[in-house]
Image (cartoon, rainbow, N blue to C red; front, side, top):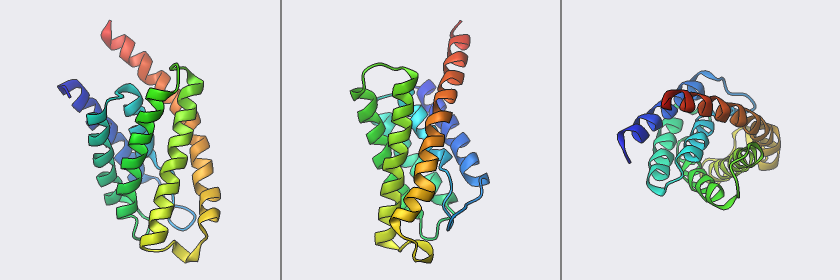
Amino acid sequence: MNTKTLVQGAIFIALGTILHAVVPGFFNGMKPDFMLFCLIAYIIINPKPLPTLAMGVATGVMAASTTQFPGGQLPSMFDKIIAAFSVLLMVRTFPGKGSVQKAVIYFLATIISGAVFLGTAMLLVGLPGDAAFTAMFVAVVLPTAAMTAALGVIFERFIAANYKRNRA
């Protein structure tokens, strides 16, 4: 990992942490995970195992420190690391780098992350208010996945435009 990659990762973590901390929770403390959004974008840009592991752990720690979900610290760690390597696998597996492929990666990674988070939370601490896994998945994870897919494509275009401008 070179200095540019490390700085880029730190910027993505900072952006994700700020957004994760300031967006309020809804539906039993759950909220869209902007930390995951930044993690996915970073891995799409840098699809290598070591930076993926580093970002998965770092975003997991930052998400755990800012979660509003009761007992969500360990589930945050698990879901970020598993989601990070899922993204790496998808980036290396899906052909092409078009907007549709990226939207699919954002969507599926959010589904995986949400399922791991809710499943781990359910096993370790239980879901708040005795909410059902399915209810929380449908109410929070699916809408977040759709939002992440749309915003991911927009964010990717912004990053690509800035990257091209800075290389010139």
